[in-house]
Structures are given as structure tokens and as C-alpha cells.
Image (cartoon, rainbow over all chains, first blue to last red; front, side, top):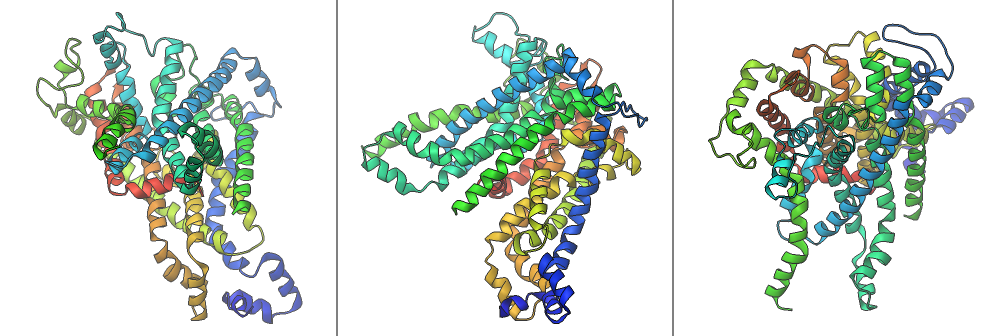
Length: 317
Length: 281
């Protein structure tokens, strides 16, 4: 108790002051004025540049706003029009395929890489540093080199495949709709894999060694140990990584914009690139805002699940 | 099993499987460097082996970049924006993280959740309305538009990271300082921050990296060529119509990645801890 009254000026004033002031201090907490002062700059920044734009985005999506015009309220017409539009339905389908495939690849290969990194003893820092590099290099710049690697005439990938006599003709990586989708998934996986690997690796390090020793003395082989110890104990980490990456994979802009601009024939458009094309390139801000808002329910679901996971993790501690 | 036998086994079961991952991660970056150093004649000759430089190294692409484009302006713009946004975000992050980690007050938990939600909001959700806000503030086509908007994703990140870091510092050292007559501000500045320096470095490194790498806001908010940042300048100014200067593009990509790679080499451990902070806390 003595310690607590020493906690700054506020506590003293609240302790000495009259009853209403004390009641107020109890309701808000003794350190409230100090806490609010410190939080204020971040709070107002996020209020004006995140919350307000979000409200604005809601308004745009319900209006026929165009560049330079505020527009009038038109209800859900933007959303109805989108759901009827072939391009938007294609975008929805692309988003599902892109996110599912990229997340799947990153999870499987990230897990494999993490398990390998965990056992590496020689050149540990060098190998870890090397596989992490794609995540650090600016995506907009590294995607340029992928573009060059899949360039129609001088593609190094095609050159290699032809030199190895795997194919006889150039493969049209980016002009072909399905191959273009494969390519953007590949580049997203390249960039995101380090995040998965290193986070799963940190999860592996946190598993107590005794569990493996106990299992080993019970005669469990490597595969049994993976299924019965590693995987269950890694599930919380995996869930957080996958959910976190799900948002940023789904909302990806850079890779698709640079490699394909959403083409060929809108077959690689994602929410972000289609929203960009509608809102900024053809000036239909209302429609564009409606497209990007489709990300929001998914975002909410993920935030909600993550918070539950985080809370559960803290109650275990 | 003998020591040598075990070593050989690890080559096959461990280092051989790791090799493709390392190759996959590094090849594009290697190819970026090789392309930027090759002469055009060799670059566009389909009969040569693309992996190697056989007809001599050239710095022509770098010279072209330096002399005929606004490359160094973009570089300086990126530097200004990243330093500005990083300083703002780390300061706001420290200020917000301290009460969230240490003090009990009405609304504290809700603000913590709000920070977490904004941490997860991708820039592509908000770029359209933000364009309008930036216009209304009179900031469009100036570097300020980026210095002001980057903190929208950097502040939540820094706050979240520092909150976790502050919590690992034992409360007792602060309580001791307060018994000795320090107030809250003094304990934060003189006691907590010096202990939390690694956390602050980590937050600053990530804020700088994320600002330097940002593409969408920089593409949308700033259109004059001389005000572009590195990522956008290289992409949009070096590609004109259907003519691609691949050598120049790759040279730009190399120099553009260079500061980040250098920071990364020196601070690898900070990057690793920052990456995992969000998930394994």
C-alpha cells in the first residue's frame, strides 16, 4: 500500500482530495491523467489517419463518389453491382486460390525449413541469415528480378528448362492466365517463407527438450515424436502465423501489381489490385472502396480469433 | 556410430535438404547482381549461359542510373521519409507502450486491443480514403504525405513490440527508483529506457525497413518524378512503354536493397527477435 501511494503525484492528490475527485481517480485509475497524456499522440494519429479514413471508406462504398466528387448516398448498390460483375467474381475466386495456395505452400515448406534449421549446427548464422533474406529485401524491387526471370524472351527459367531438355519451347509464364497465377503464388511464397520458417523455428526452440527425451525413452521414433509432441505443441504458434499471414497474403498488392497488373484477362486480380484499378485508374472511388471493404469481415474474423488465442495463451502462463 | 560417420550422415539428412531452400532464397538476389553487372550484348544473347558473366563486368548500368535518371533523388527521398517516419513512430510507440505495459487505467485494455487491430490492418484496405485525407491536408505530392501516413502502420507495430519488451523488465527496479524520489517520467527516461535499448533498436530497425520497403502509399500519394521514393522510382520511371532497361532496373534494385541488407547483416539477431515477437509472445 505504501508503495502504491508513492506512485506519482496523482495518487497523492487523489488521496488528499475530496470525495468526488477520489471516486473519479478510482474509476479511471490513479495514473490515468499521466497514462492518457502519453497515449494521446498515438491515439490521435490513429483516430485521424486510421479510424477516420475507415469511416470515409464506408461512406465511399455507399456512395457514387468519383475522383473530385463527394457523390451521393446510393445504399448498397456498389456491393450489388460488384457481386454481379464477372471481374469481381473472378477477383474473389483468384483471392481464394492465391491465399489458399500460398498459405499452404508457406506452411508446409516453412515447417520443413524450420525443422531443418533447428538441427543445423554448422554455419548456423550464415544459413539462417541467407534463408531470411527474401523477407528483408524490398518486395517491390525483388519482384522486379522475378519479372526479369520470367520475362518472355530472355527468361532464365525457360533457358534452364530448355538446357536440361525438360521443355522444347518457351513457357509463357506471365501471358498465360494459369501460369501467371502460379508465378505470383511462387513469388509470394518466396517472400513469405522466411517469416513462417523463423517463427515456427522460435516455436520449436520453446518446446522443452525433456518431452522428446521422455518420448524417446518410451520408444517413439522421429515420426511419432513429430506427430505427438512437435505438432500439438506447435499448434498455437502455427495458428498465429497462419492467421497473421492470411491477412497480408490476401491483401497483397506489390507482387501482383508489379508482375501482372491483375492480368492476363483479370485472372490474377486480388482485392487490392482491383480496388486500385477501379478507384484510382478509372476514378470510381465508391466501387473501389467497396472492393477493399470485402477484406474487412475477414480481417475482423482473424483479429477476433487471434485475440482469443492470445488470451488463452496468457491464461496458461 | 563414429564421429565421422555421424558427420557424413548429417551432410545427407540435413545439409543436402537445406541446400534447395538456401538456393531458392538466394538465387533471385544473385541473379539481380549478375544482371546489373552484365553488358547489354551479353544480356540479350539467348545463346550464352545466363548465370555467369563471361564477357566482362560493366558498371554501365549503374552509370546510366546515376547520370540519366533521378535515382539519387529517389534514394535521398526514401532516406528522408524512412528516417522521419521511424523517429515519429518510435517516439509515439515508446510513449504509448509504457502506460499500456505498466499502468492500470480506464480504457487501457480497449486501447491495447485497438492497437492490435490497427497492427493487422493492411495498407491496401485504407489507401483510397487516405488519398482523400492526404489531399485535404494539402500534403499530396510532398514527402510529408508519406512521413505522416507511414506511422499509421508503424506506430501499432512499435507499440506492440515495445509493450512486450517493457513487460519483460522487472517492475522492482522502477519501484526502487520511485522510492528514491523519481517520478513516472524520470523512471521511464532514466530507468526503463536504458534497460529497454535492445527493444527500441529492434523497433527502429523494423520501422526503418518497413518504411524503406513501402510501395503502395508511395505510389499513390506522390506523383512528381523527382519526389518519388526508391521503390516506386525504380519501378515506374525505368520502365517506359515496352522498353525495359533490365540492366538498369537490376542495378536500381541492387542499390535500393543495399542499405537494408547492410543493416540486416549487422543486426541479424534484432531482426530475428522482431520477426518472432508478434507470434511467440
